[in-house]
Length: 349
Image (cartoon, rainbow, N blue to C red):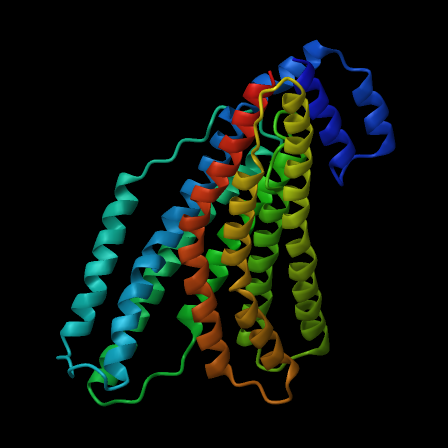
């Protein structure tokens, strides 16, 4: 128990969101309070909250994730590297993806966890409705692309209309924005989940999707206004600033494990979680850093005097594809981080 008390004191000192007054109040708490905090921090509510948000993300992300693999085939065909398909081949290819996504949609019923949510019920309800809008816009976009590649296969010019793509980006980014906003707010404000979290990561992802929304608004605009460009610059800066917070998260985690390690070393029971945190940090960092070249190029396009909208669409499509793959892969790492923290706290007890 004494190690657990040390850990919680360290969190109060290390957390960048704590104030001096918070630390004074924390020092007055008894070991019984620490025990109560441990009970609510042993993964249950954090994982329930994460799973709730992740399930809704996946409902929308997975159809597009599957389709981007198909899109690679279509692009190879359109570039002349593959055999010329029949006019029925492309719609059939797309339909198979859509059918699988529709089947998955029908089989996935998501229940809201029985948690003491800080977010108002209206916010949660709007989030859940945004998932359905995202799926609908995704299917519209996939069918629109099917028609465009069919035209290309028939020797016609590839249609330049981007309305279906724009609607898809808007609906999908809105869902992901709300998802990460709910996670961030709950982790920061919920009394049971405000200590051990990847708070910087959730804010970073929120800012990335916010950048997508702002870019999409500029892409759809007839003329670029200075105010819109300034919003994009500000959004880009927020992405950069929030990126630094991921390292702060792991700085707190490593501070905790170091105190725990030193305490255990004195007892002759060496234990070290630093290698786990190092690997998890490297995995998360490498997965988010690949977004930057596309984000920077999108910003550069809108900064230039002559915007190449075709290039912007290509860049945003590539970024959206990376984000779709990222959502599933990084969820595994996030669970690993929480389990490492839980294992450390359990041994400290």
